[in-house]
Length: 380
Image (cartoon, one colour):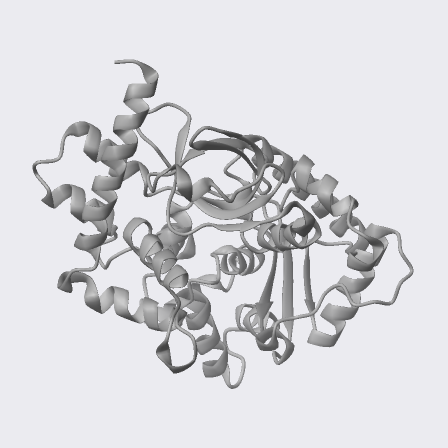
């Protein structure tokens, strides 16, 4: 079988499998999971457009984690015993889509050569909806899209969900949107292994500059002091005397009594609400009104948005009192941090242990940098 024949067969089979997977995922067995996602994505009056619904369903089928940790695609493969090994390989490969904003480098028959402006990698992308689906796409234009691997064809990718097309003249807006996405979703950038190493290097440099500027990698400040001093630091890093605001706290942090600022060599730069109160508990487990402080520690242990970092920092800084703090909190008189601390954090925050660490600094790709530099001054 030649390459062209194998590709054509893979495209036909992908269309058949995707149709079956959609029907499986939209069945009554999954209504209680899918319906709330569609409702959340709907507009006024609970009405959603077809493109938005299609993309919600696509994400649900491939990436949404059911209570047992499996995806709908996992369930589909497990229950369809008539699938071939190649079918299973194809569907399971779809669980790791590439999301991004792409520049169209070239068109060749029923495929596009795309450059992902987020990870700076090229993708040869096909559609199983027929070649007319790509007719309006022009070389030099841009796409917002999701791609999945077209297994078992090497280096071939398939459009999944609904893509949006933009003309070449939209480059300034696309560049700005990509930059925002790179900052909010650095995981999309770090699909490129080179960007991971660049990210670690940039973060190490930035952390060193932070420590030099503040004299420490850990600060406890009021919200007002946090914004003022962080903005002073960013102006220093950017060599500007401008008084424009570069950094603002979230509403939750802005209302806190204190803000903990920790720039860790692995976890990066993070901010913690009422960190000063937590430090006071570790410094003096007998302090008056400690119930409030203990409740705060429970929150730090419970919340998935908080890594183990602040608790580890406080435990290391207060070795003489850490056992007392946790014995009272957990009501376990035999608890010792040295023997039980790591197990406690693994139990309360398994996601942290299971997640591969990534740099806390996003890295801009070469082409995205060119597009950002070429924007008109009014867009900068």
